[in-house]
Image (cartoon, rainbow, N blue to C red; front, side, top):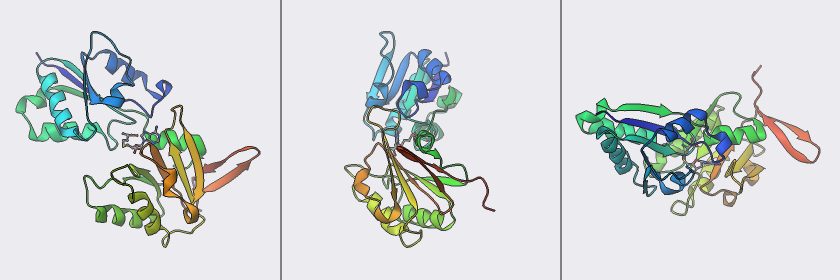
Length: 250
Ligand code: SAH
């Protein structure tokens, strides 16, 4: 029997930001695999087996999911946001690439989700309406020198930068170092948006400038958007300004 493996993006938090396709993939699963807090976002069902694990065990989790699927189970691996953006889809394909030949026969599917950058952008207007890039500030899987080079070149090239994994308890200094590195490259007036826990009850959106951006405003649930000189703001009475990237540079 050939099992199935769906790698499912759950969206940023709120149920209404989860796609119907994700809901069907979860519904069809006999087994759910993922980081515990993400599994907690899926309604419990007595006939489904849950395999929760620690956040750092992505490859082991991916192998476990492939083993279950190859044995005939219908498995859903869950990620927050989009399954392919700094998330489990890469770990599953890495495991498949170097793993048992029968894993390639598994009927696998990647189910996309609303990534944190899109949820965050929607709250402030249209900040990703022109060219942008996404960079994870975590140096768990790549050297910090690679991060700093990408940040500098992206800023020099005029990309809006969406920063994932800005900091955590184990990595408290990266976001401050990133701001320090960008300050000589970009004007101090460049807007910086801190979007924390978007679509969850604790949601908080702050707009600062690069000159006064305080890394302490961020935690591991924060997506940081670094703007460009092209961004415009529309002031509104008694509300946060709209921030948008015009479509044209002319
Ligand atoms: N696959 C996920 C990203 C996982 S990396 C996605 O596509 O969104 C984890 C990082 O995502 C966090 O450190 C944070 O930067 C961001 N993130 C995840 N959920 C978020 C939310 N609800 N609000 C703001 N940022 C979020």
